[in-house]
Amino acid sequence: MKTITILSLLLLTSAAFGELTKEDLHDLKEDLHKAIKEDIAASEKRTREYIDLKIDGVEKSLNARIDAVEKNLNTRIDAVHTRIDALDGRIGKLEGSLNDRIGDMWRVVLALIGFVAAAIAIPQIIIARTEKRRQKDIEREHQDLQTEIERLRGRLEALENTPS
Image (cartoon, rainbow, N blue to C red):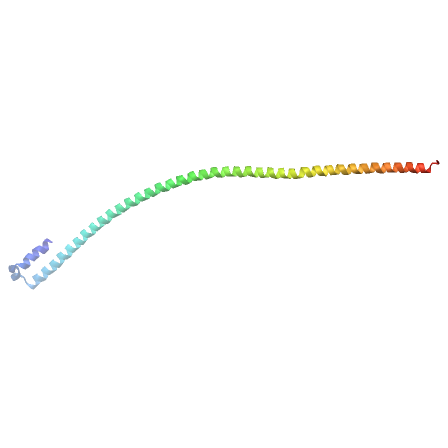
């Protein structure tokens, strides 16, 4: 920047123009281009450094926010896991209780089936035994009557065959 200012003053003064040759002007022009290029490079460097600083600041800010969100999410996830574990425990207890109840119900159903079977079978068995006894009694009575009939027939024949 200083170079541009000095060159500007030199160009504006009429005494400086009177003594400059074409080669001097050409050298001044090259020096001016060189100075401008250096100033532009320095400006670009400062701009890059400024942008890099801003990017670093934004990255730090974003990383801090991401870390905070991640920490919050991890806390919530841990809370959800805790609730899931608690629910698993409750479900396990309910499942055990339900299995016990189902087992009890199954035993009751089997007992009722046995009771119904007994309620149907016992009278049938009693009826069958009674019928068998009655049949035996009838057969015995029939035998007794047959024997009595045979005895009476024998007596009748004996009476008929005896001279009167």
